[in-house]
Image (cartoon, rainbow, N blue to C red; front, side):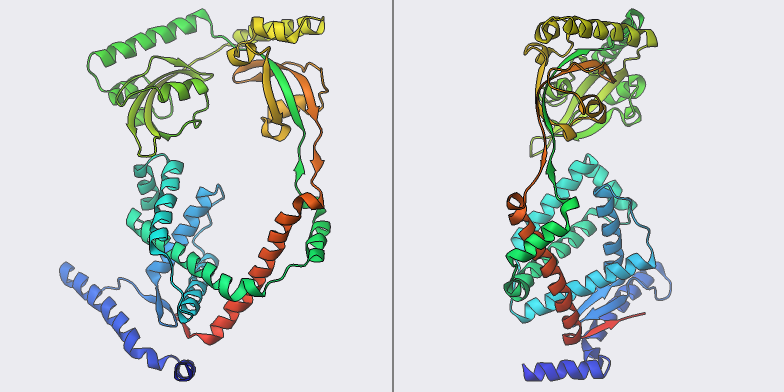
Length: 453
């Protein structure tokens, strides 16, 4: 150990001279690759990669940094945040991240720690599956990666490296950081008092009933839809492919892609009628017309994934309504509200006129919801409503609604006792983060680091 320490100190004093043989191997390898490529193209030497930093005995290549930057941007997009540009500041942050990872690995290996490669492979595949679900299909993910200058293999390799680094980090934190962290009761309480404005609160919850009057299209519009559906069915019956028929007849945004929607899981679709239809189909089967709040859908099941999700396509025909159709529905909902205000039972009126068949069978009762989980339109209508009150009509894409508040539970701020276990973890996390930053700073003095220009 003393010899190793002296060697590292000498290395630092001499600017890494003792690393020449190892570094030369890496440089020779890059030169050989460049020379091979050059000979293949009949030209002179060409740079294929370069070293941007050396940490202990680990090399960080330009390609590593490039992939880290692209992965960072992709993760930001996946999280719904605006993707940062490829700026010097971003590159500096990503290089620091790579250097710190290498330092953690060096410390872990020095302590004879090892990671679970099999668990890492499983985690990589799980992460890829999540991205496939987010982008709709594996092909869509490949296209998105290509747009970022990466292949799926590039992404898989980078994600494997990242998850391996995270495992090493957990091992190092568990051995060298966490055992020295102590969280006192008064520290947790002080954190609670200092951050009262940010403490979560249980929102109001409401048990509500509704009456829905859908906006019905005119007879002429309905006839046009029926005629179009008949044409589509005849085209499919003649042997034309679904893709071709969708490109000709569909009026949805995916028409140019042959009606391709992507991969969906149960509950992903905006209308339960569509959900039921999709998961009742066999592969290559086309559904009967399904009416949703947006229009008429003819759905085709293209394939089924190993985890049971469905890849689907559709021919979509929007249902267009005129202002007079909207007004006719408004007159009906106002009449229903007047009947209830005049003493008729909300449940009986809902059962008679509501266009929501599920709740109508239960006297209009929808269930109990947290106020913040409802749409902004519904929140605005229900926010100040009292128990027993009938709201004014609310216009939505599904039609006109009125609501009755059957029960209301007022929300409250969580007490310290309710939150203290979670807050203890937050305080501990902050302490670990601070201690880890100091630990990594110390590692910079223990291990050799050489950043190239």
